[in-house]
Image (cartoon, rainbow, N blue to C red):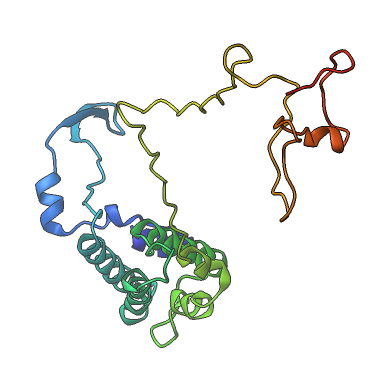
Length: 239
């Protein structure tokens, strides 16, 4: 795969799931055949061309897949193993780094997207010039050194904020009814209540003053202040 890239001069990103070991290729190889025709028109049965895949869902398995990816690039002459492996180690340091409070850790998906962006930028930089002499530096090495600190690449390693869903407070099974305000008890106008024309409450009298006349009848203090509500005939008293 990488040798074909070197011959065509076009760098293509290879997913980590496609970087299988020889043992994994042997285990996933199927013997299902497909009928095809050769140049002379004769029918022949040939095995189906299926790309073997490996699992790269965990950090350890993804690390092993990217290591095989680096070895394949070194064997094809596209990049040095030490340079590509240093780039992979740089990615995993961001995954293992503790983030500030309120932010999530960098995920493996972000790591893969960052690696893909690096190869996309390197493909534009090295288009048509993947083949170099033995003593010349590899084209992918120069692209990695030039772009590994670029904002176009590092933006994929930015920690994302952690969103917390607030749990709704469940209502009690037997909610208590709201307390009703107590009604003010009004005095009954009928019965033993005082009449509307009563002299009213007796004020505190200074020393030497009396609240009754010479006949012992109470004096109307409301009449003195013009607040007596008695409307009887003249000569009658309110109390």
